[in-house]
Image 1: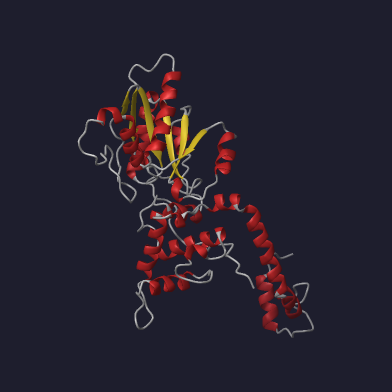
Image 2: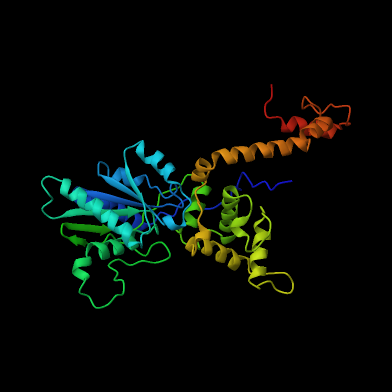
Length: 369
């Protein structure tokens, strides 16, 4: 029998909010700066394009022209046709980028310059940008790369080849806690930008969204239990590729069991003790980190369930049908009918019912007539 991936993920009791004081402070600052802003760049993680969309931005920065930038394109399996479908319907510009890539930064600078020269009259104090997004989607890294590219002529005489940072960056969310003062990206024409803290939603709609945000680093790694996070990663990878190739370094067959996978990862790293135990939390954190960092093309994937369903809809419907056929083949329904009666009253001649059985039948009825 072929492997059948799980269709439903357990409804674990995890927090659905990570909204902090500096997030509220940043939103207030956005409102104060809005009259000065000519263009907004909203950064989303292309591995979780829907989960990293923050509806609060459209409320605070309504009527502002916006370009949506999908970062970490080198780690994502997101298809351009899907983005085109989403954005063309609302006439919104979008790009997929690598925040560290200078060619991508040059493309963005060219778009900004085009906007500047289309403005009549040109803004006397220069074109002012704001870069916004959820925590840890790559905003500050993008600011640094845009500065390098836009200010290249001025920096050409510098002796050091080391990449200079004008905005602090880090691997965990919350490195940027305050909206920056103005940063000049170019002097010809004059382009200035505000780097801003990542802003979380007051609450997300479900645990799948929160786990997706955990996978792309929008919430701190200590916020969600590593084993639950690793289990969700396994669940998503199996939906995208039921062959198990995404973790074939550790196992030669697909699995729905996170315990089995973590044991095999620990075994491959020679971390299983003589009694068969291993550091479950440490191994789970390691495996999640490997996929977060994505050090090679092998780690390209989507962590957004709705995006996976849109992309692989046809294949997933086929898999659902196979699962229904498999369940019917087990004749579970027929066995229940034979045991309890076709009408649900449990009076079938195949089984004798006791007074206690009938008492529980009455208690378990959904409705009383």
